[in-house]
Length: 383
Image (spheres, rainbow, N blue to C red):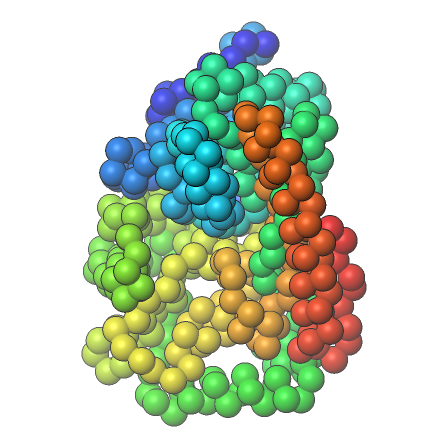
């Protein structure tokens, strides 16, 4: 086996990368990652420089990891600002650092991309050690694997990285027949609340459209991007995704697109951009032109839950944060990341911190589970 670091994913044929990534998660597909590179969403302006790890065996790509050099911590959703601050106060440079992640995407997915016909354990070990060696050679402060699955997290821990735990809210579909069947699973108070919120939108005269990438036109993408930008404008953030990115995703992976648009009369007033994998729907971005009671819940949650039920999807991940999701059927689940810190003193401090943090997150999730909106209790989540 031999290794290569690619400064652009365009060096790798899509069929080779996707053979490793698999179809389950849309964010690690070649089409999604290349769209970010081609449409001005990465690079100098935003501080994401591709350093993709590639492992070849006899000329065949058998392993890969989407890796980036970073000069900031924006767009990661696993927050290490306090670590960077501590480095700076100690007179050290926290940036640049390396991350194995999907930019701007807080969704768990494959980070060790493996050829199903290769020795997966051996290739995974090669990728992890190659990433560590690249970090040492570049003399970066740290290496971070973000939103890793449980199996990958365990593999990373076995190579000396420290596991960190976070929390998100996910909706699960045990096989509901329709939206009313889902409502019947909720306690009375929550069921009435959702019905009241949906009725508010219906009574306001707002209509909702759900489109895939084949149905979405350039005009739809313009509306979607305008609403996406408006959310960041109101929150003093930076809209990193270009309109060209949305159009590229719609053109190259149309089956994965689930676009929810709300219309009042002849004008669109809100939109939500989602992507679907083989078994899961991922809520990504939302925006609106004004305040409409309960419209956010309708567009971002209820329409997408209904979509999952109708299409047999087993899970809906609506993005980072949001305790308000609990009342609408989203239960707390742990998320994972793994971290390597070059400086031994800071490494020890980070290890102590994440152990304490894991206990706090475990208690937090356990407390939230006591407030489940479902009539039957959910199983305990193991961290």
